[in-house]
Image (cartoon, rainbow, N blue to C red):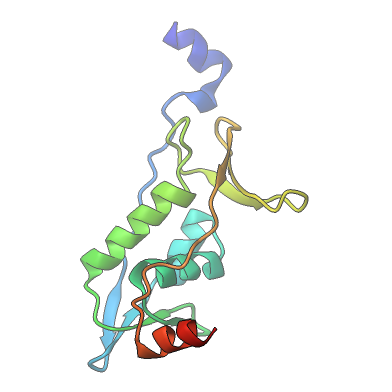
Length: 150
């Protein structure tokens, strides 16, 4: 049976395994962390740098900026393990196909319904995904004052 499937639909059988390069993280001064190979990682996942950056912004809860060379700079100290964990969570939520578990997918935004979909290139499955939401935001005195007045 497997031989017949492999003959007629070779793309359904195994295929190549997706390996992600480990994030290269460097410290800039004492209070900033730089994700050096951010641009390469986005290219491998077939995602825009803005979308991945907004996910990092929401998950880590800190301001991050993108420089012209494709490096992502965070305010705060983060270890490579923490950055790798956020990348893994992003890939599960926005890259991996839920049907065939393949990472060969595209993120497509529907102009009519304004929904975002993951479209798998291997099994042609389509799944809607939520937009990147803002992560945890601690309320400070200014926020409480603004809520009280408004």
